[in-house]
Image (cartoon, rainbow, N blue to C red; front, top):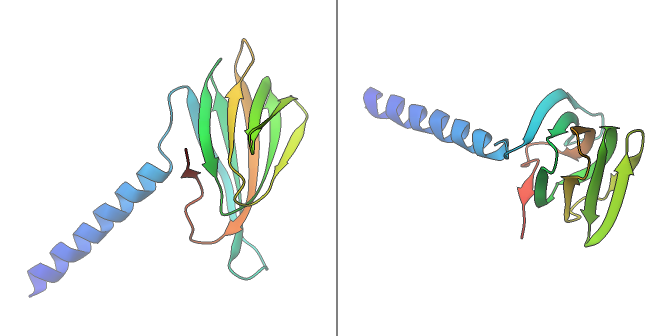
Length: 132
């Protein structure tokens, strides 16, 4: 009985680790670095900041978030597709992305580009949900 419980617990830990790895899997030419994660005084919500670095021409496909995102471009130029409409931002500019809005981002610079993504999301939900 004890061996069964330990085996089940180990399987849950491995499955959870794989799910988290899949959620935060890096795409070619894109590096996501967590900056901060903090509970808010808004019940069931948290703030998350992530630095996203894009190699020249790198793109992150269509996806959504379970809350609001504010994308602030730190360097280079990024073209976002927000609900099918293109928006190009250069360093020092920001974009408000509503909860659940389908969007993507692509580095349109000849050099590296990066953004600071700030999310206010429902706690415990998958941060990035890939869509078609």
